[in-house]
Length: 198
Image (tube, rainbow, N blue to C red; front, side, top):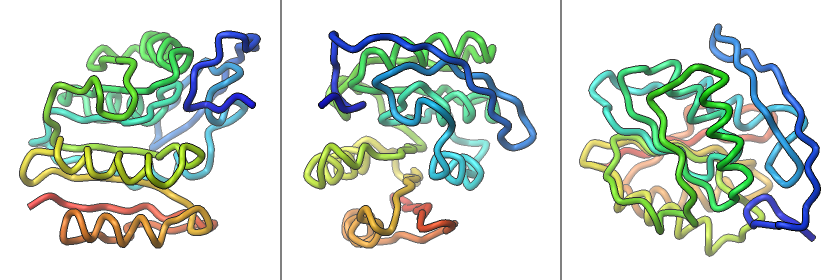
């Protein structure tokens, strides 16, 4: 079975366009088979985007596990003074994210294929993720650990996760790593979590 956090060169294509309205802004995204939430923007991603508050001093933002790019592209559009770096292991998702940056006319983005932080060679002021739950707990916790290492002092880490898919253990892990974590939004079983690096 093919998963969105893997590459499957045998997968057919079924490109479609979805229209999304986020924070008083319209977006259009190409999606395809083999990427997360291909038919519509998932509820957790929407909840996360609505909750994000990036300080004007933040210059570098990472969207880890970007999929076809809704989080990173929305952030780039809403915070044009920031440089937003999108990463995903799925090459089809990376290709779509690049196209979606173009059709949404955002130029302050860079999209790079990477398994977690393997090809990340920058530090960041903000890291945002809707983590690939199906990749397993060990992979998710590695993402959190690497995010902590990659953040600049004072940096922010945002994540969204369903309670039934491990939000309480994520809350505990982030508290262990960062020394703090708060739930800044919750709806339909999804928790939006924010941790700050001191």
